[in-house]
Length: 314
Length: 284
Image (tube, rainbow over all chains, first blue to last red):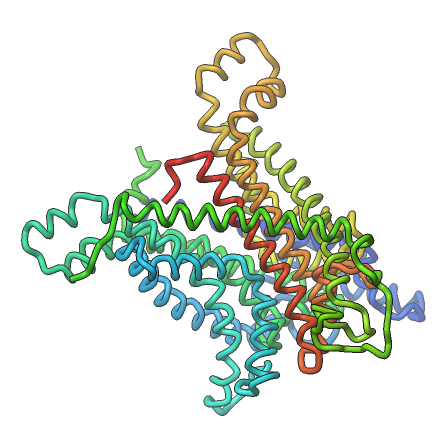
């Protein structure tokens, strides 16, 4: 396990380094540079002073190393628009994203596991058809349009729920604001779990051990929970790591639709205002979160399934 | 206690249901493409004809999808928008499939260090949050059709590369590839004439899925205001226009989105059917 852990950690760190280079180069490839959105009446001397203050006159590799060094010490740069440290901005917005993602993840996993298992156990029944149809629809619906639709129906027409935002304090109002974005994200994510679990349970049902357990007189609910469902969940854990970026993207889109003040919304605002230090660091932080989540999922998976950590070891 | 239905008897109605939905999906795509192509012939109004006295009209027989804030017919704009959106999806898929197939074939066939490098590239590109990269590139280059296609194509090639790499990897030890190598054929010739045809099934499936993905991306970018600029109608642009009228003209958002949804659904359905047809083992 330790060897596997070290290998995966090293791999993740290398990946993080590659991602940091890509983030840096991507922002340097911007047409027009950081001044493209700025007032053309800025004097040349002021412009030169700003360029110097931002360190843009130094060679590329120096700029990169300065930025990377800053990240290592927790300094993610300063926003060009507000003058705030980017780290503080991210810190203020991260809870909203984690909240949205967390709620959607838990609810969608619960729904996905129960519906996926039900569809597989009642294969060919109307429940199976209904669940399969739902997952086909959910996999195809554009998340942002679902969000707009939810706003039209539940906020504009029925007036039941707020159309967006996230008020601080009062948890009841907070929960009301969370309902629509979390539901939209859940609808988009649940089908992925349903599909995988349905296929995985069907595979397990075809194995010998459920039949063997039944032959031993084990109670049916116990056969299903212990001998069928539990071994089938492994496929879901594997997928969890791979799905994190997808969930994050979904959350970011949902945030922009519902004005939910999370990381996705923060990035969207920065794009509109050409706030380059914020964009560069946000891109990196989001990638780092995804890589960390992936690593965690892999480690959990390796803990559960010894075949994974032993693969590649001779 | 629980009726566990498995095996053959349950499969036939499901099969028929699937076939039915497949033909429905194909028919829908055909009708929509025809509508988009023939829009100038079948529609009385052009996409830009404004009727200020008919601003934000609810759906009616005259205007089945309603009218927008300038009194333009939403159905006409959806059909004209379909031309743009489908072309963007097609071209960007072409880019994604070309890049993905090229890199995937090369990495899978060569193996070793090449494979490590390409895999590292794929992993790095996948680790970057796709939505952020798209927003960034879309805000810089999204305004024109050609650059929008390149942006979408270049953020969409990774799944294709992965699939093709796996296929090429499993093919490279096969006797006919060995034979081609023994005959002294060049690597490009072996890849294009011998490996590529055998790997074409997963490529076709990946291409259809990439097209569906590209449609969704175009629409999302357009919706956020980073897509093609007005007055060029695309499905994303139509949804962007609808943003300010969620309360007074919801049909402006409902219908373009619904058409987009149905097209993506149809693409997914077609991809599933192609996969099942090409690989019967996967059909569940």
